Every structure is written in structure tokens, then in C-alpha cells.
Amino acid sequence: MQVTIQIERFLLLLLISGVVAIITRRVRVPYTVGLVVAGVILSLHSFFADVPFTKDLIFNVLLPPLVFEAALEIRWKELRKEFPVVILLATIGVCLSWGVTALGMRYFAGWEWISALLFGILIAATDPVSVIAAFKEAGVHGRLRLLVESESLLNDGTAAVGFGVMLVIASGSSLSAGGVVKALVFTIGGGILSGALLAGALMLLAKRTEDHLVKIAFTVVAAYGSFLLAEHFHCSGILASLTAGLVIGNVGPLGAISPKGRVAVTAFWEYLGFVANSLIFLGIGIYLSRSNFAGIVTPAIIATLLVIVGRACAVYPCAALFASSALRVQVRHQHVLFWGGLRGALALALALGLPSTVPGQEMIVSVAFAVVAFSIFVQGLTMTPLLKRIGEIPQADHNQQATGDHP
Image 1: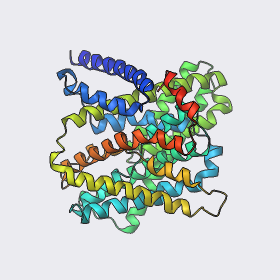
Image 2: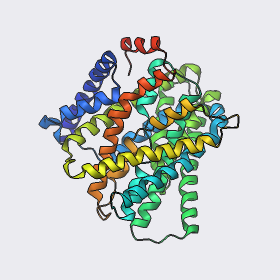
Image 3: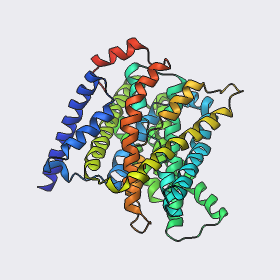
């Protein structure tokens, strides 16, 4: 009976996601905003009031396909040219954002150091779903889309790794500088190796069949299998799925996946990404309706302002380092990277996974949801106007979005 109820819920949520997609395209509102609003409305009905929205669901079930699907479309040849910019934003940039947020929460909100540091690193992970969706709808490609998408994927990995190290410290374990370096190398290297080895092995198997359904099955195993393998050995599952997606997206076409098979694989993962995103943002809406933000208004406002300032400190100084080089990032593109650094699934998954022994654990979760809500409703709603203003989305293309079918 319980299984039947869960299936019914899933089917209804899927149906609602499709309806929301149609409506939001008609009224020209970001799909993610519509989903969150729908989630809030659904929570009023008892059938959806207790829908689980846990760290395990987000992190282990919904996040791997999102990471894999995004990585699948990134061409290594293009990424390699932009890699210095992307890696700087995803490492030094994340650390700058982390530092600004953690310091601010410590001294302005009065949080304990460990709470401020944990919150700072988990909220540093960006999730520019609305930005990428706007790019896809308008058919925008090129350097800006590559920078936004690849930087987000890599900084998710950085944030998850940093969060893991901070959790070890929070548990009372002492780590020397050398120990931290070893932990980082093992976590990052193990994640990349897990993704590369499993994806490579599956592509060798894929060469032995022309059945595109079998190839799709192999990609599913690669996305989830690499994630679970890395997590089993306490490495980065996000980096594993990211690496697997890059390997299959770039090595697969070299004999393992035919052009026809690639179309099928891409369509499948685009759909799976749609489902995962839909469930995440509906879940955010349902969870928000359960939350009591009355007692956290001040820390939530402080955190939101700090996250915005931290993102600015991550983007503009890092981009300035390339001002005189061939990798110069145009100022208007810097604005998109800054304002498009929305917070979403990973930040919430990490917050929900905090142990109860962390000081102010419930406060951290509530404030994280408040920041994500601001990100979705304020930044998400203003992204398309910003893209239009800087000329990334021509007016004609924007008008045409209202007649499309896919979010």
C-alpha cells in the first residue's frame, strides 16, 4: 500500500510538473519559480504534506542525473580553452565566497565558528538552473553558457569536498595542514578516478552493441554507479558523476555511440534532468511551506546579503586576473556569472545532511532554505530581463519562448 501511494504521488507530481511547464512558458515566468509556487500550493493538501524531502533523496537520487546530464553536453575541447577561468572561479572563487559568508555570519549574526564555516561552504555551491533554462529556451550557446554551466558543476564539487572536510572537523577530529591536503587529494582524485574508470569500461562494452537502449542503460550505470562507487570509498560522488559525463560525452562519439545513438542518449538524459529538476523544486516549495521563518528573519537577511557580496567577491576579482589576457571575461558576462549564481539543490542537500550535534543545526537549515527562496524568486525572476538587457537573449527570441513546449 505504501509503495502504491508513493507511485501515485510521483505520477501526480510528474503531471503537475508538465502542467507548470506549459503555464510558465505562456506567462513567461521561470519554470523553477512556477514549480516552487506549485509545491507551496500542493503542501496545503494532506496527500502531499508529508512528501519526504531528505538529504538522501536529493544527494543520492536526484543530484547524480543533474550533474551527469550537464557534463554530458560539455565539449572538452571548448572547456580546455576556458579551464583556467573556470577552475579559478570554482576554487579560489568558492573559497572567497565561503570566507565572506562565514566571517559575516560569525560577526554579524553571532553564530559559532563551526556553524558559520559549515553554512558558508554549503551555501557557496551554485545552481544556475534558471539561467541555463533561459539559454536553452532562447537557443543561446557560446562562451557565456559554457562558463556558467561548467563553473557551476566544478564549484559544486569544490563545495561538497570542503563541506566534507568541515564535517570531519566539526565531529571533533583534528586535522593538520598535511592531513587536510591528503584528504582533499584523496577525495578529489578518488572521485575523478571512479568516474573515469567506470565510464571508460562501460564505453568499451558499448562498442560491442548497436542497440541504443543498451547504451542508454550503460550511461545510467555510469551516472549512478560512479557516484555510489566514489561515495563508498568516501570520495566525491559529484566529481565522479561529472567525470563520467565528460568521458561519455566526449569519448562516446569516438566509436562507442553512433550519431543516432547519441540523439537517443541525449534525449533520455534531457528528460531525466527535467524530472529531477521538477521533483527538487516542487520539494523546495513543499518544504518551504512547512518552515517557520518568523524567528530567523534577521539571520536570513544577513545571510542573503552576505551570499550576494560573497558571490561578487568570487566573480569580479577572479575575472580581473584575466583582464589583459586572451581569456578576458567581458564585464556583461561577469554580471551574469555574479547574478546567475543561484543557490539550489546541493546547498539544501548538504544543509539537510548536517548532524544534529552541529550547533544551531535547525537554524542553518532554515536560513539555507531562506537564501535559496530569495535566489529562486528574486534572482530567478530577474535573470531573463538581465540577459535581454545585455543582449544575450534578443527580443525576438524572447517573444518566441511563449510558444515553445519544453521548459
